[in-house]
Image 1 (cartoon, rainbow, N blue to C red):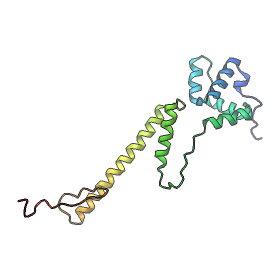
Image 2: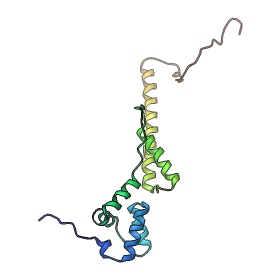
Image 3: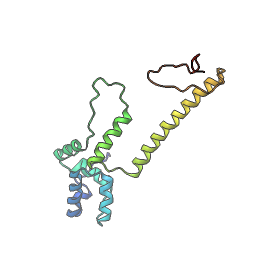
Image 4: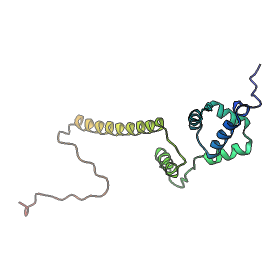
Length: 163
């Protein structure tokens, strides 16, 4: 026998104050985890799984659609820029939403972001080591050259008039 979704959830069947609180927080766009924490603090606990079920089953379609539209991440326009760094775009969007007060990052979010940055730094160090090992194996005994991006000109320091 397949599982049949209930006509209403624990939020709808429970305390009216808890329902009003949850729906007002959902209308503000508060993440389910924060609603769960705040409801515990207010002595009317509700799990985030119950909130998700409430949004999916009980909340009218128009409210759910508005909720999804308000919480959707704005997709940046990439007109002609096929070399855009996805991580940089996400970081810029997160900073914009954080400054607007819409985004409330958790400790987990911060640790994930820091681990991504650390991995990028380690990869850069690995590339530098590979470059130096390649020079060493090729028989280049002097210090590796400094790679300068952009235009440069070479000037002779030891000329007939400089000595």
